Length: 307
Image (cartoon, rainbow, N blue to C red; front, side):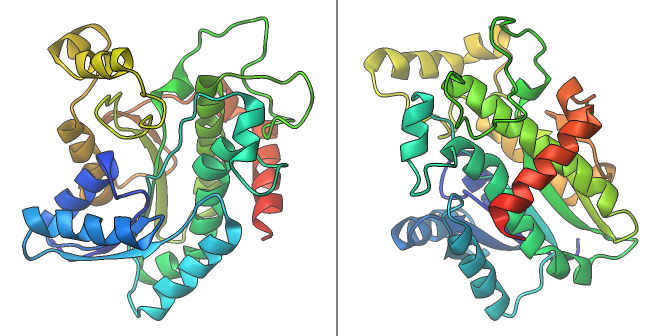
């Protein structure tokens, strides 16, 4: 297998860390992103503990901050590395109210779940497109893998409050309250929307983009800030056991790892513009197929990014 240079965001814990280990085991050159140096050093050490000859380095980035993303891209370019694969894995799920989620970022006009899960990856991907285009070929296209959620294809919604405020995704209008779960779903719907649109724009470029839900993996660290009680910890343990596998179709982190690694390197995933639920191409939600939604999301992402 040809050695690839792969960036994985949010790789200091959970499924991102496991995917980084898996790709290092295959001999690839992996760049992991973390929010600070201490986490970066710990991540590299954890990977090398399991893969002693791993080719891995870390760079810091804060995905809720456009300037931090721009700084990261410059640091990566200065490393002299080419880029074959970008895995937008970093994600945020917060249980707090809409108002609280605004205070998590310096700019109150942007809701933090949307910025981290959708806007940040959009800017990062666009700033790295030239690097990806430079390495992609017809036989071996460069890849963008956006880690999404199975929540995007859930159709049962509370009819009393529209779940997808396409004209107010940052929830700045009074009266637009959504739960942390709805906000997370909205951010992943928005991610899928711009991914779907970018797939069309990349036709003929030898760069492919797909989204994947690697499965419901309770042992990942996505909701680590929300599980603060003994009861919550017990529930996460149960969901990650055979009981969870049987009744709520949860997946072990090893399965999530395998699925993300597959999206990066396998021939059968050398597709473009598809949504994979676990390992299978799956029809998108109606919101993602709406052409007007795609235009609005793209415009919002461009505005946020300053592109």
